[in-house]
Length: 281
Image 1 (spheres, rainbow, N blue to C red):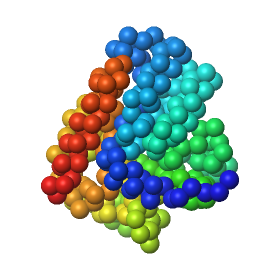
Image 2: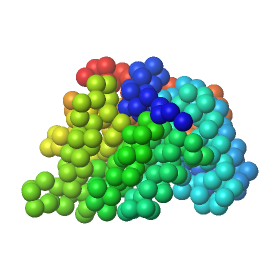
Image 3: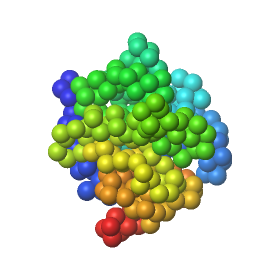
């Protein structure tokens, strides 16, 4: 199969047309219960189908969290495959939140699972962990380029434990998070619209002006909504790079289910708030 148009170009167009919003598909047990669903395959199927039906034809990005499907075994993975297929068919870009990271042939196998164009779980982009060394991601980088997919590399995450690795200072005086951003800037060098290799940077981190976030690639920004960050915070956190931010909202939208109309209205409110905040920059 021929490669798709590069992910970065497709993402820029989707955000311009649909608004810069990524909504998670996170069917954890408490949310299934809130929807009146069982913590079982039937509940998982209903939840995922409802989110895709409500949002896939109108938001730029949907981001399924693979772990919440994998916990049900092969039947859960089958639901994930269907969700990815249907979301992409409706026009949403799918970022698989699997946070894979390994070395050699194992990393290559993870890449084949999510980034090979004809794979059952093929996604437009994949979250990956670089903490076996950025070079360990080479199989995923190469296959993403070949297939027109993208990566989101964990760089500056909002969880408090992340700092012990990401803020560690290297011999050259840069910390690890900044080093990852530098690698991504190199991957995206020369791209005219938006590079396909992005970073995960928490929207709850406050002033990040000491970091060069302008990597010519997207910045996936979890933390809007239930985690406390707002659309109005984005410019202060991301500075000039805010134009490339993909704000992620999960519980803030999903808590309005299982009503399809309520899910759509919530996503539209977040998208409009984000659009207005970015227009004011």
